[in-house]
Image 1 (cartoon, one colour):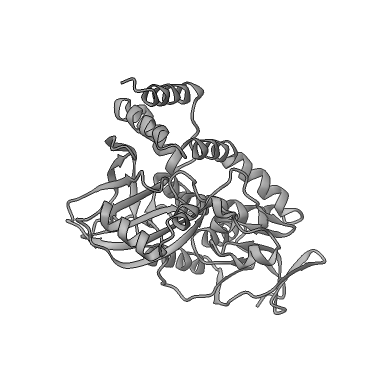
Image 2 (cartoon, one colour):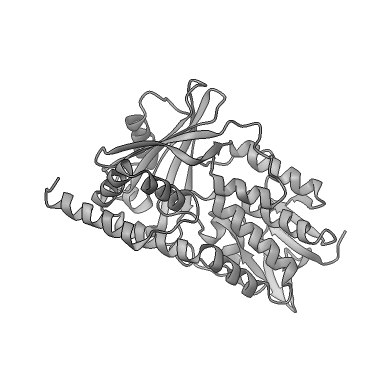
Length: 382
């Protein structure tokens, strides 16, 4: 047992497991401890979607075949708030894998690589003398906080919680679906916009289904959250009655995430790394976790500076893009114009997928075309 761990990771989800896996991949002799308050497998409320960029991260972590037994999803249909619909084959297929399965596989892969995994609930954290002390029982050179939307590590650092205006809430369940159905669906709703429902086929005769909206919009209804979320899911997907419904918060990226303090790095949801346009977070989690693991073992003297630099290089322009687009998307007419443009131009559809599920940015020419269409529609020009 290590007296001082090289890397201590809090949270066994995609971000935490990626950090632990990368640390051992780059430095097999490093002592790495992964803590989670639960045993695996365990359920996690999520859309379960893993886009191509997420699979790229798995390959970088040395796990290219982790999802090989799950059927890829080739098609995506999107319905805008105003009813504009686009359906197309995506440039690179997506996967849908329940978090009960996905997270457990990642943790087991980390264990197989030599990471020690323990069930432990973190309650205190103190940085002192070039080390970080956790619960007066564990000491590490670097700590990675990857413990989700309600991160204890983030709170112990004194970092502010994600503002309500940047927080969404969603309800997720599962529904029966013919095995032959392989198109993912996102159905947006004008009422309480931004809001949308989704149905993501897993390939085993079930689909992950859910509905999400911004937390202030939910509060503005003046009605119980369960009533609103469950009711709108039934309204938008009446043919897919859901079971196992669970709600969860999504701390959306404000464009410039807080990467940590001193020798404590924040990754994934704990760093508010969730796409504000789509609510996608698994790719961000795998990427940020990998970068945190790299910084922890390759730059142990100043891991935060290395992590901040690498995170900015990987996601900086993209996060600024999604921040601007999220502001524009407060108008449902802007999204109607974007989806209408994507319906006519396949390259625009592919770019919207890149922005919503990966690390894409929007060229000025395309932004101008969407804004022009938006303006034309707003004055009644067709």
